[in-house]
Amino acid sequence: MRRGFALVLVLVFLTASCIIEAKPVSGGSAVENSWVEKASIPTARGYLRTAVVNEKIYAIGGNIFGSNEEYDPATDTWTTKASMPDPQPQFAIAVCQGKIYCIGGMPAGSLGGSGANQVYDPETDSWENKASMPTGRFGLQAQVVDDRIYLIGGRKLLGYNLGFEELNVTEVYDPVSDTWSTKSSIPNSAGYVSVVVDDKIFVIGAVTQIYDPKINTWSIGTAPIEKLVMGVNDESAATAATTGEMAPKRIYVYDGSYLQVYDPLKNSWTFGANPPINRQYLSIAVVNDTLYFIGGFTDHFNNIPGYFKEYNTNEQYIPFGYGTIEQQTFPTATVATISVVTALGIAIAAGLIFYFKKCHH
Image (cartoon, rainbow, N blue to C red):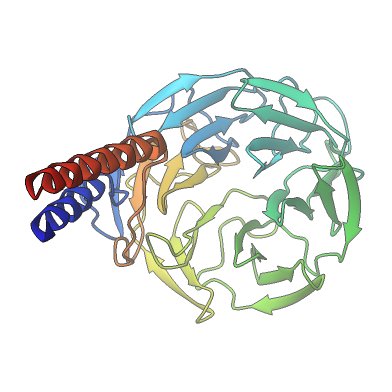
């Protein structure tokens, strides 16, 4: 009888162990601070924005068109999706409750800035409009904390010969109530990139400003080692953060010249390996703590003939310390499999118990 139970335990353990797996880097082994070329985005462009839903990357907008293309890192393939209804450059993007919010922008042929709030649902491949942002603007960023979207800073176009005005406004959107509220203004509103780490919003430009939504206050962190090329006049840089699940928590900022890495715990910066193709106005997406540098173009303000070029490049970056944090997860598609395995284990156990009881009688 004891042998029967031992055999049951071994069978159940072996069966369950077959369905546990660690999430690997797509397309090869994980070598930290290294690059891997991936399938090119179909539409070459800069000023695009990227968002991640269910481990798939959505590359939306860019320049003045509204292309929407989905990338699956698991298969290294692209699929064309429903285009953005009202395309405009330099909008902000954020994912909240499984939907992608594209907010603001610079409407073609008009002054000021847009307050448009266009929402894309990947499940239905459809768009809808929500309550407009109170302060129309472009060149801003959107970040999500506790299911609310924070829109910080941005610009208002004064005139094609007058330049633009930097805005320091912070407005928060609640997707549940479809309403807006105003929060503490950012101290320095010049061009920036931003990212969330531990529910705090890091706004990085000439200085590093940290916003804590819980207490609605700002603080100052350490500035990048090299002043970002973006300076105070544009937002040509891109940023992303690793979560601490597959790689240590770090913020990665790339401005077309340097890949700089910020450690929020130590409040310090270092350099990472630059991408094979240097470019600006690209977008960075993160899937399972792996970074994807997508699109971009060379500096369009440079007047050297032939210098301007749009890229459809998609480069995967393996961050520092990738794989040093042990993690085993059940793949999302194995819930049904686990149920079947459980039922199978119970059936095997019952059969063996019945068999041994019968043998001993």
